[in-house]
Length: 66
Image (cartoon, rainbow, N blue to C red; front, side):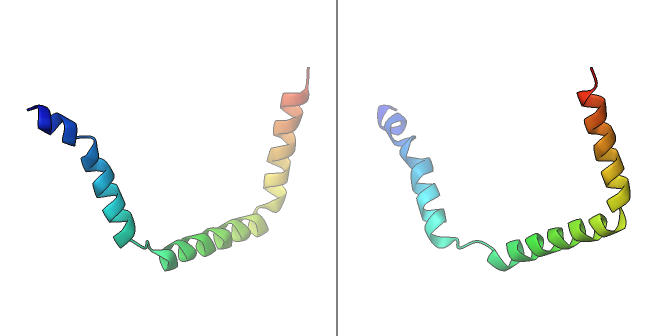
């Protein structure tokens, strides 16, 4: 029982290190997500620039009023 308690903290570290060495990640997937997010933000900005500006100005005015 005592030997099992001593080994418990080592197991998560061993699993983490072996997973980190063998896993390179999904770089093309993350690049695709980043590019699509930038595209969506740009499209929304082009379509709703006036509305977003007025909403932001109203929010700032309502906060800065005494």
